[in-house]
Length: 98
Image (cartoon, rainbow, N blue to C red; front, side, top):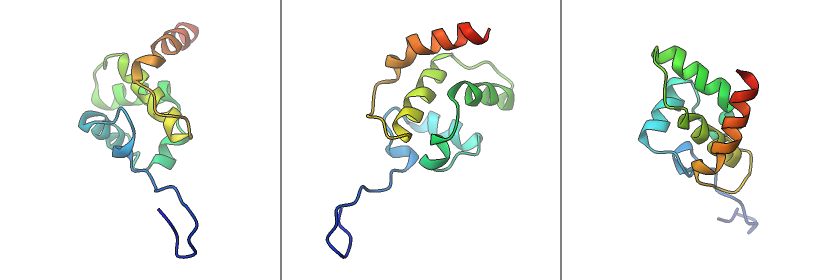
């Protein structure tokens, strides 16, 4: 993409453009009040997961944390990675907070 002056720009990503974001995750993010990649970048995956569980009054699969970690990583400028690459980090993080 180029500006009128001919400079290259990066297109603005939408939440749905992020790797690992399908309809269910997009719905979860919207339920949490997150509408933009910028909003997502400033959030914490574990806090989002806990908030989602409270709002829906059910315990979601812990892999949702992995997905949140992956999309937050990308929202902060990291390269897109499959959500399962964050499983070990999530397990370590959860064991530290338990």
